[in-house]
Length: 353
Ligand code: NAD
Ligand code: ZN
Image (cartoon, protein in one colour):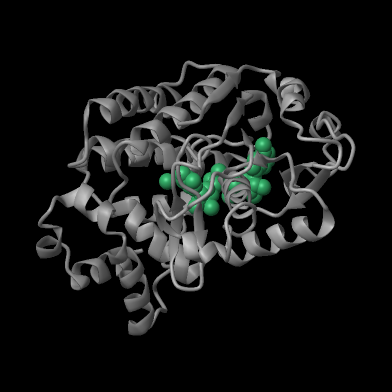
């Protein structure tokens, strides 16, 4: 679990005080990985507490993180600074938070990031790392994974060393998120709840977090009596609780199939989950009905026909990626999932998207 967290509007201002005691020495910098959407946004950048040899790197969140991108960042940090950094601070959405976690791990573990995609393969503790979300929903701020696209698979580095040492939850940072993106990433949280609460891995720990996150999602996306600020505050906490819920269970069908879309077509996680979830009424009937009501209420367009021109071998690639995520299927369907989920069923679903 994340060991330290602060919450509140304006809490970003505490960053300097929070990290100061973690500085190893003057030559051991803090590296700030910042979503490049904030380039030129002095309201945020002027509050980043740079000192000594600290470095600020703007990173594009246009594409989801790749293992090769992690390796390049680690190499450039090692080449630029003589001393091992004091810490990595990620400021952005799930893309930047995942990169920050992966870079912190790979600074202390040999070889390439792709070798650590899987469960509990990391040998050495990561360096100190801090996560500061600027959009709410993925739960990446609280999870023990960092999802990466590698040469062979899209899979997380799941380990006890992955979670942040410190998280700063400042809902004010989310105020400029575009509406569609707000919905897609918010729905990631909603889908986490539905997949966790309807999974065979469910237990009292996951259930208590999942139910709270779902209740908050309903307040935010269905009932309409919150101010913008209340809504943003609550979505940040829904994201946290949704992430905690899957930390002790798993996601399910939407995520498995969304990974296939992401791997082959580069479709991003949030919108990918929405594209898949539109067609999952056989698996999550109540969840899908609720989702469709929210999509209509907020007048959000979901891309359609993205699989229309695909060839058989491309469907096969997506199906291979989806089926390789065995824990997700076992959670969604049960131990006998291989008898229930056939390649043809998945192909028919992908063809509808
Ligand atoms: P994102 O980080 O991909 O960002 C989406 C868009 O929103 C980008 O264009 C970004 O620049 C913009 N943005 C972010 N904050 C903004 C702000 N305050 N104002 C204006 N624009 C802003 O979005 P996401 O949905 O949070 O993250 C998706 C990524 O998270 C995927 O790579 C996915 O694999 C990963 N993910 C990780 C976990 C985990 O547990 N590690 C869980 C779910 C998803
Ligand atoms: Zn997700």
